[in-house]
Amino acid sequence: MDSEEVFEMCRRGLLHPEAYSICRLNIAWEVFGSLTFPRPLRYSRRCKMFLHLIRSIAALHRLHFSELRWILRHEQHRSGDPHLHFVLEGLSEPTSPSINRQIKNEWMRISGGLSHIKAYNSSKNGFVYTMKAPRVTSNSSLWDTSTEVEISHSIQRQFAS
Image 1 (cartoon, rainbow, N blue to C red):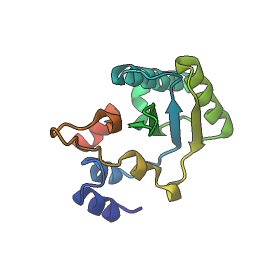
Image 2 (cartoon, one colour):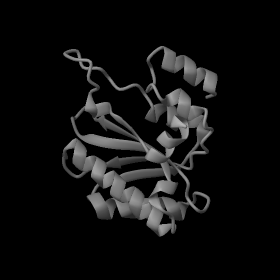
Image 3 (cartoon, rainbow, N blue to C red):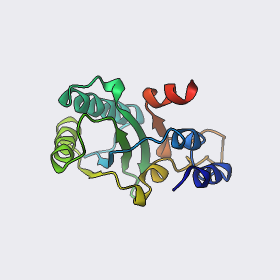
Image 4 (cartoon, rainbow, N blue to C red):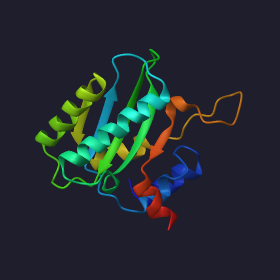
């Protein structure tokens, strides 16, 4: 999907407001992943576990965690169970089955949850899926945290400058 299509989706409110700015950075995403939890956890705890995963991945690749660029999406399954989707870029080597296994093993060690990790395939629009617009609750203008999107500081710094 090109930046003009992303711009149009943002304009129509279908994507997170920052999606167009991020799309214009032309990030070559390397990994798309889905992460689950063995039991429901609070939003803040899920964030901490994901950040622990990012720091672990960075350490395994001898990188500082701020060198990895990522976007995280919190969702709730119809059953009410929370899960995460993310895209990642900045690994020190090309994505391979062994890297995918590393991420899966780290997630299992950190959370006890399951994961589905794949090399990023741009034809599947993982970036667009991750950047779907958060739902607005009917009672307020606050974003529903069941579909909150988190953007790494390394990306935020890029489009803020």
